[in-house]
Length: 400
Image 1 (cartoon, rainbow, N blue to C red):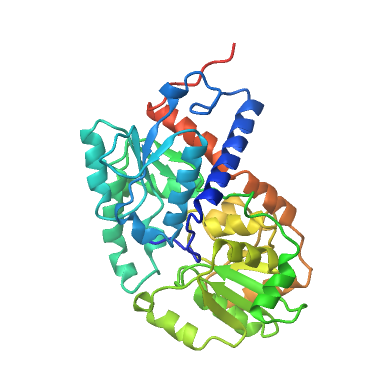
Image 2 (cartoon, rainbow, N blue to C red; image 1 turned 135 degrees about the horizontal axis):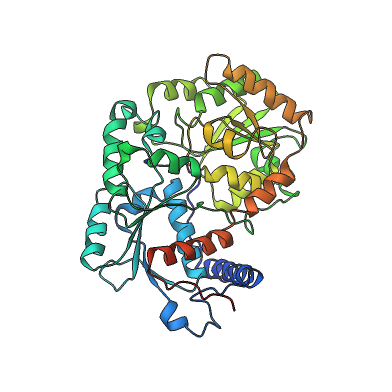
């Protein structure tokens, strides 16, 4: 989507903390490669370190406008995994670089692609957005959706390879109307499971921060306040369960709210809270301290916030959209509610009430294991293979 759902601005934070996270991720990447008998190019102890280290361009440009979106989070994740592989992150396109990552659907993206072609450097374009997840976003988005699709298709065709976060989104952008002929790779945006992990003590802290009684039930969602994100249904579910506190972290500029979202926010019941953006640590506290994560989005290409919730061991109720219905069927990693009609909110409220009362199976251990499967260390190893497939790195040495 144009500005994928992020409810929290995720700054790099103090340099020391970021460096520790990168070093920790690098150790996890090295451990994973040793376990599989492979060698990670660019890691210390590699005798070909000087040859294998890449200079990876992740240009800032207009990408600064997406820092509070899912695209912004994906870019930060890419920077971390690139560094964990021993490669150098370059942000200035005038400096030397070996390959460029392009992530945003902004006007400077084709300029960066043309510059890389002029320099004879490979271009990786991330297909975060589709026509489908642009709909029901901002005023006029449904009318503009076909034009937006033609624009992002033009951008995706600038790549020597396209990277998209799920099999579902690959199926969408593989359609003839996108006209992509380059290879399309699937690579999760990933989640840092060493940061997002269960913390039983967060339950009490969250209720204290919200001014609630210790035994209060809390349900949260995370994201921009868009129809596509399910906020209209979410407000109605909160209205149906007045004994539960519902908290929506994140916001949308009021100028970009559709009329129906304005009405929903203005008439929301008192048990529905909208604190706005919070820090990464506060978000982790919220995931770990909540009784459930209620994510009623109508369309996603991945949904990083769901992986974060699962990594924290938060029981999750989601709408049974194709991405989740097919990748994580109901009752495997999440509990799901199908539909999008007038009765959906009532069905979701009943299902959520059963989850809060302990009547549904506990899936949190399975959710945590699945999140570990898309940990940034796993993403790093897969990105290295994409570099090899693109030809910017030499093929991995064959075992004797």
